[in-house]
Image 1 (cartoon, rainbow, N blue to C red):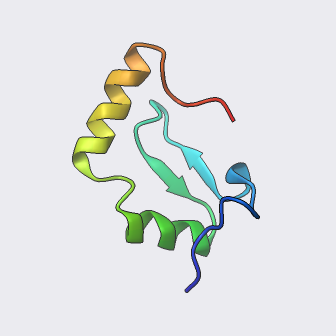
Image 2: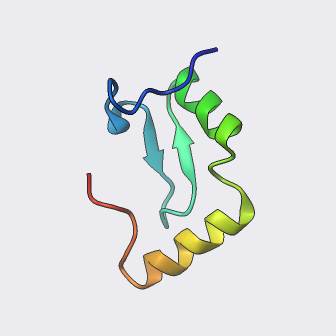
Length: 62
C-alpha cells in the first residue's frame, strides 16, 4: 500500500481530527496506512496533542 504524499495530496482529503483533536483519523485507505506505519496516534503523541489543544496551540493551521 502506498502512503500519503504531503507534497502532492491535500491533508483534508485524507485525514480528520477526533473531537478534541488528539487522534488523527484516516478517511482513505492511504491515510489509514500512513497513520499505522508512522504511528501517528501513539500514546505520548496523543497526550501531547491534548495538552496543546487545551493551550489552544493545536490543531495546526493548514
